[in-house]
Length: 494
Image (cartoon, rainbow, N blue to C red; front, side, top):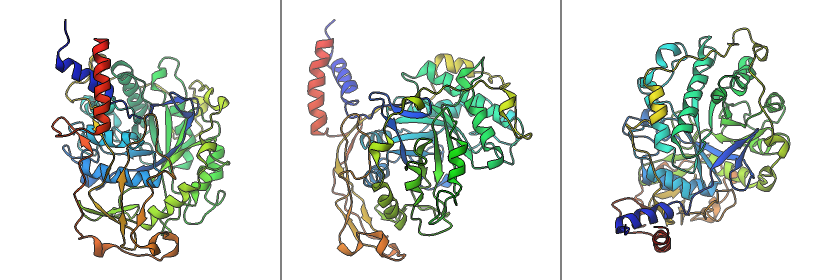
């Protein structure tokens, strides 16, 4: 049969939209590694939840606003970010544009599957009644939404579910969610996507939590976590490796057989945050144990942890914390921290046993709960109540919003840059920012300042759209070139 134009176009798009894609990351031993090169991948990341939990709804989440994602991806490129974590996501939202924007910027995503809405998470005080099919619709819906994006680095099955308030059986329910997610991905995604857990820094049970999720069950290896995140704020101000207790954490996690990283860090009890812990985290004392970390958090909220203040949809201000973090990331030796280590990538997990658990208040058995009704069918046939996301074309562009530094000076020429295929973002790239006045180029030479006077300034919106969806009126030149070549390729193949 002679192929139709629509068939040729579809084949061409399938080829072209993957042309500028990052390389998927996989887990080997205690390292994240580039699935093509085998190089170690270290997370230089930030937690991304603009508006906090109050800014989330069933129809609105952080990866549903393409204009905001374009602005933030451009600013993250300059900072050196290569990974974001997003806490609250709705399967009802189309994430294709935002995921494609971050993919083009060389930025990976680690995504929480839980939601603050009713039925969207496990209740740590009553996991038995909340581990149900309604909850797993949220979980599988998020997986469906993001399984096709190459920059989906992984999913968090839970965040701080296990702490001083959780019931004794809570770890088994979280591990059951890990099992369900990994089985769903295995049956319904075209590649393995890591699944892990983000733990609170509760020292009496921290290592028990690690061991509980890290060990292999003889009858259910799919329930083992692929990675382990730690939310830790023990380094405050100009602390040190020993004063902060980072030396203890490094020793505690030195025997891990999966990647461990800070899923939140950045104590704000001393302001501004100078992020001196970055040199320890990515230095010789810690970089072989930890796979980097995610700074809490991107936007300024009521809790005062932000790197960027969103003044309006048209303007944003880079806070002093942004400048200090940029300076710290610029000092990181990327060549050193990304060097592969065959010893680390060949580590094998131990078998689960009660002897691994040392705290009498922590669950020491691995009898996981039975799956709720409908879940086995969804794993076998797929959850079809959402539309799986897919890459769309993106192009390099100046962002339309106006950006100010912490002194209120306008930052000139802020651009979003589509990186080459298989390239991830790094510090010291070619997208550094320049303020319009020379006396504001260094954040370390100025006291605390506010750009609130500039918050009402009107931003220029003359830049062309950088995201081409199904209704877009133009395609980038590079995409047209790819499309032409891909069409010829498709004709040959068909």
